[in-house]
Length: 360
Image: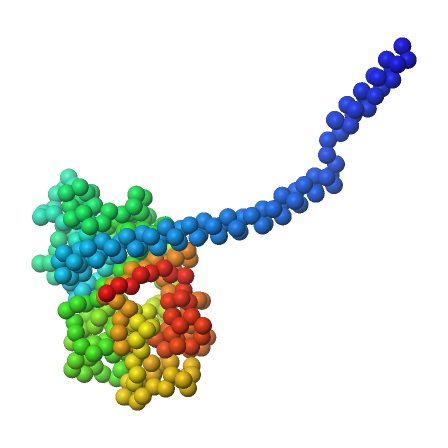
């Protein structure tokens, strides 16, 4: 009988211990461990996701570049229904028009152009200029469809109209080729009809045979290799979740920047870092061994990175963010080609998180 009582007492004590649960100190210790592990693992997981998106985007840019190369081999020109001069029209810098160079190229790479408007079809009217004779109609549902040109079909889920575009008409209603971050890709396509000796856009005046690397638009008498207006739609026309892919902290935007500032920055990006001119704008020889940061303005490219350049804004979804950019000083938002030859990167594009390919 006594033994049975002892067994019952022992069982009651064990049950009491089981019912007591964790003490406050024990719970705080467990919570602290969880928080510590989360602090270690979450950044690593976030970094892994960013790296995966960057890898996917780089592969997508390469595939799109291959499609451009295939079209060019077949047609002896870069893809694009409208000419670079038309795309560079100041009319195309209107945020309500804003046809982009890649949207223009997709008309040749993936099709969609139809002969006439159809109220029963998903059709938009396009023209980068105000010349109504140049208007075309595009059936959005036929872009990339079977039976089209077949050069490029965007990956599933990466050819979309975002919320800002959905309320627009014309180019604002066109889907864009998106990167893995959900932002539109951008294409810089050279004006292959323009020829001459490359010059920086900050010269006092252009002479016969001069070819500025970049101008804001094609309204002047001198043609250029590239025009900023051809991508105004993606840079400032509301093509991203942030409505503009050029905030105040970028080298192509900002209330203090002039047209020439933007042209200088674009020339720095599109000029080849491998081929600097051996002389400055005045014809004086440049001694790269003794050159310092005060001589940024004297160095300009003698060749382009390529006939075209495909870009993604990267994980920050902003093109050419100046927080990452080499500059003359903290108050100068202009990036100059000469920055290629100072510092460790030796390529101004490495200062940004933008992804790109450039090909001839």
